[in-house]
Image 1 (cartoon, rainbow, N blue to C red):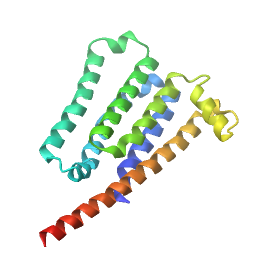
Image 2 (image 1 turned 135 degrees about the vertical axis):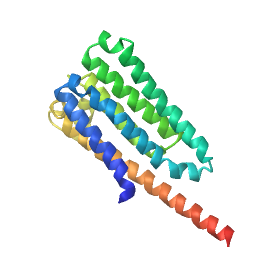
Image 3 (image 1 turned 30 degrees about the vertical axis):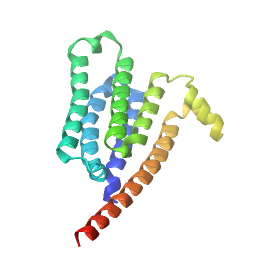
Length: 193
């Protein structure tokens, strides 16, 4: 259960931030920015076992993580201090930040920790819902596919459902990696004996 805790934290925080953003986009931008170090820390810790499985040098893994997340921090810093934040409205800026977080998480999933893949897709989904809140094509498609009446007015409920699906998919990836990790450790012990 402890291995699932980081995934639970990520998905629950993202759903709460999405819910808050629906009510006040301008007021939630700082929370999305505060969420970046949480994602980076979870990525660093949870990807540690994947680096072991791929026989990656731990120092190289740490360098990649620091450069990857450091680049996102630097980009957010530049966006805040070079006038981009003032050049667009709060909804656009918040959406841009969420997309940046989502794509940085997707790159981290592909290169360092695949367990974050479904979480990054969920963030893209949230950013899309926030970018186009009225007559959203994705909500209409999900509503038609699953027979949800009035899907346009149920963005939060649908996002919670998508988060649950993403969490379950991430759990399967986690369990498969745990199995591979256990197999590798047993194999290493047998070679050592």
